[in-house]
Length: 185
Image 1 (cartoon, rainbow, N blue to C red):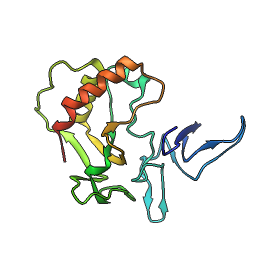
Image 2 (image 1 turned 60 degrees about the horizontal axis):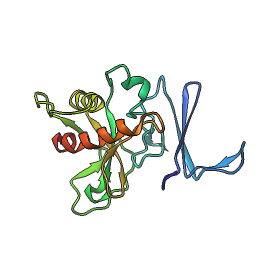
Image 3 (image 1 turned 45 degrees about the vertical axis):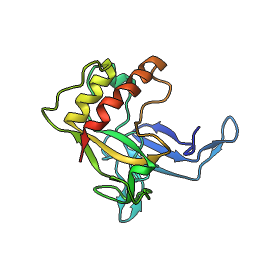
Image 4 (image 1 turned 90 degrees about the vertical axis):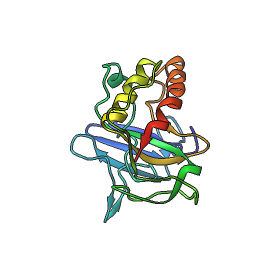
């Protein structure tokens, strides 16, 4: 679903990340492109030379890296940086860091794809955050988030599809209104 039509398939140690995936029958499908990465030995980033994607995000990173995964958040701790997609109006042209590409185009944007954003150490946690919101706050303060793509009209974290109930996602959405303004490069 969605404009990217993305699909992640994990086969052994390899994650395949498909873009514009279309299931054509019970056993076949097509995709406009894909990237792949070893989830044990890889770093989740694509290669600039030769130009090889590890996934379908605009920056060439795997969508598995930085994903909120329920089995992990159920432990109470997120031990990695997160993925952040930003409203297209916020993303300047170009890309930085380990990114191999970008699709930002806003002349008034404030970030570039590939930017690493975080909450400064010592920043107090906003009151009233949900349990998942508290985990996200701590992860953003400890590890940060990478701007991996643009989206239409919203800035968000990526989460495992169909894993969290609506109440949990609604609470996190409200929490992000308190958390997102605390992020800085």
